[in-house]
Image (tube, rainbow, N blue to C red; front, side, top):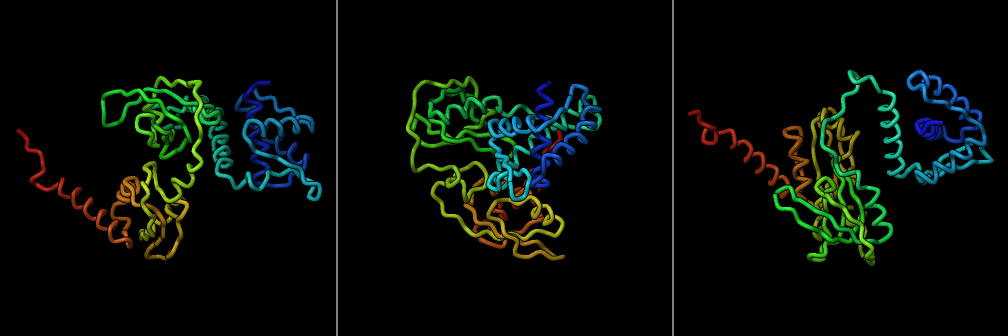
Length: 314
C-alpha cells in the first residue's frame, strides 16, 4: 500500500469526525468507501481497503504522528475527536495542511487550474531539526544574515520556541553574544548544526505570554498594551470579521456605514505596517498617538509624489 493511501485515509477519518462527531464505524466505512472511488479516479495508486482492525491501527498512527486523539463514546456509540484537540489551533493547521497536501497530490497534471505563489523557500527544511533541539534542550549553531547587512555572522544560541508570521518561520533563541532573546528568520539561516551542549530552559520565558499582546514578530520590550479602536469601511470590514487581525479583536460596531473593532496590543512597527496597508479603508479612532503615526506616514508617502520629489528626465 502506498504512503499516499495512508495519508488519504487519515485525512478522511479526521475530516469525517470533524464534520460529524460520534460517527459509527459503519458511517466511517461508508464515507471512506464513497470518497475512495473519487480518489482512485484521480490517483490509481490508491487502494483504500478498510476494516475495524484498520481503523484501530489508524487511530494509533494519527495519535502518534499528529497528536490528534480519536476516542470512542459508548453512550453515543461513535468515534469523536477530543474537544481539547478540536479547539486547538495546531489541530486546525494540521487539517489545513492535510487539505492542501491532498489537493496538490490530486492536482498533478492540472497546472492550468492550480496557480501556486512563486516565492523562495522559507527555511522549513530545518523545522524538524529545530524542534528536536528545542525538545532536548540542545544549543545550536548557524550562519545568519540580516536583511540590512551583507556580512554573515556565526551564531551560537539556546533555542526556545518557533513562531510563524506572514508565511515566515522564526526561531526564538537566546543569543550567546549578549544573552538576549531574539528572533531569527529561518530563511536567513544556513549551516545549521545541533550541538551536544545542553542548556537550562528559563522558567520565566513563555512565547505565549511574550506575544500575547503583540502583532507580528517584534517583541514589545516591556511596553504595556493599549486599547486600539479602528474603523473600517463596510467592504473592508467583511474581511476583518472573517480574518481577524489578532486574537484580542472585538467587534464594537457593524452596520452599513462602518465596522469598528477593538484590539489590545502593543504599538510595534509590525502593527504600524499592517495598519498602513489598509490605506483609506481604515481610520484609527484610538489611541491618538497611533493615529498621529498613521497620519505622518501617509503625509510622508504623499510628499513622495510632489513635484520636488519627482525624477527629471535628462
